[in-house]
Image (cartoon, rainbow, N blue to C red; front, top):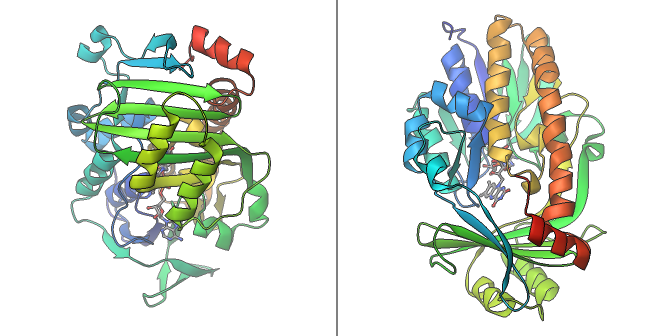
Length: 376
Ligand SMILES: Cc1cc2nc3c(=O)[nH]c(=O)nc-3n(C[C@H](O)[C@H](O)[C@H](O)COP(=O)(O)OP(=O)(O)OC[C@H]3O[C@@H](n4cnc5c(N)ncnc54)[C@H](O)[C@@H]3O)c2cc1C
């Protein structure tokens, strides 16, 4: 990549999109500051899949071997009925795929990927933790940023990498609420430090409009609850106790291992709870601001590729800046045009995955999924 431009840029959000964007912008020679709401990069979350362009970009970042060393070996997914009988199963990765050097995708704990990305920055960017952007104002030659805590500052460009509920998107883009499409489902993840099923396997149990999934790896288990709700539920996203209550109310009295899993959820901390939504915008850029990752094009957890989209988007916006020699107007046009077909395909696929495979609405559809499997 190119020599230093010496220009200061700001990245909002220190997760997959923000850390990857910071990496590439630093390589292009920008002075990068990352502002993050939390006190440190946030860990937790279900295993993440790095595939396609994201894997190619991981290789260029020099982190592929680290990802490979932490690769999860998920082998089998079983579909359970209310009596814990396996109605169908599918192989996720056979022995040949696990031993092959020709790796097409890497499943890795979010807890492992985030520190690898932080490490790749090698102290070359500045972090402002426990802070956020409160106002943006563009002038002829800069964008003025006001923070909650830090003194105001001017930057050449701002990158909103602050997730599906992006603060930058809300502050800067007109008609913002129109871009977030509620997908009528909710998602909760609890991670427990014990194997609730055989290691390196997953199990899925459904009743119409609800689903429970278990994934076991590295001595831990993800307990995932999904449920359908036509109307949006109003809740406090910071109140884990409220999330727990919602899950217990939704799933009490269901079959399979539901009672035991709800007990686990009551004892543990719900590490992630959110509505399923997609962010669909006509443009991910405006003036000197660009959105990357979930902030611009969240496809929902049903896509299973949120991390890959974030890493792919980060590389794409940097490549566009390099191609246009820092002319951000042209670069942002290229970023919008080049990435859009891929994003649209992933978002459409996520809708099918959610309704037909993860949370089918009828007993017939559940039976069909159990016997035919999921076309991952
Ligand atoms: C703790 C955590 C757990 C997750 N668990 C799951 C999971 O189990 N399943 C799943 O499908 N997806 C999960 N995700 C989302 C998943 O990481 C993303 O879909 C995907 O990796 C794309 O990443 P992203 O960087 O675009 O967004 P995110 O990973 O959501 O990161 C956004 C970052 O921006 C920060 N932020 C938010 N608002 C502001 C603000 N106003 N100013 C500054 N910083 C801000 C957040 O703290 C976070 O670090 C989780 C995200 C987090 C943060």
